Image (cartoon, one colour):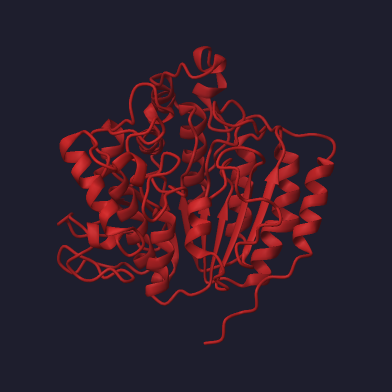
Length: 410
């Protein structure tokens, strides 16, 4: 990937005009420009949605700490995420909604129709100290990734993945929609055909709203059936370009291996994208408190390896859901390791083990009594079966046979 220096304090991204994108005045500098880039920020270490919210647990900070403990994150591969300015967010989001987020952050209370119109101040989308700055920082990283990938490369923004955000309201823990903003940024920089792959346990309703009917965006979502937001039914093609695979509870590594080979990689190869955006939510892993799937982190890692093997010149990997701090931290650190060709198996050194032993979680029984492997290794034991779930086989066959939209002429 070519190194791109900041032009003063701002970048030109998509419809993101000069002087409007970021508050950050620090130029980006890259020394290892041909290696994957990690985008992160310390705001995610100290910020929480509240002591009873699923996003009370550390996630991005754990990945950064583990990667550094393993000597996997040299300074030349790390960029501090800039915070997107309001006008950059308004490329897709309603200006009145963005203004409401800023006002609520300053006042730390809602007023008027903030709750009914914008969805701010609910149990799932609460008021907290960084209600604007935190999502704007995640979005700034994803917008920046769209610019930097214009010349090719690999970027990892684990703070990204807020795939439920809607243009004018908060939705499902997501105040903004950074995957949509990332793809709009890619589009502005000449990258037209984008494959979006989402294996979060929850369907990507916000992304579907952003790109429905767009023949140059292939959306593939593998998500738990009948789980909130209860969208993404198998025959919902979002105007022709979406492949929605709802899967049953207990969906495991064996099932995902079939989905990966018979559907995900096949559809992407047929689509011939110029870029892949991969949302790798960790809530499909066993012992997540909000979902009921049965995968180990090996399933997610193998999907990533398959995507990397397609030879697509641009890859953006985002985080997403995941509410058990050990499963999220270990899986997402492994993502960074795989992107760099590191061995993600084996026992962790003491300094990395200390990071994991410093976590606490009371969200489920296993969280209160964590198994030893959550401390001393990144890799889970495989969750496999002798046979593929018959419902998965039938649904994959149905989707694989469905034609995609015709390519848009240029």
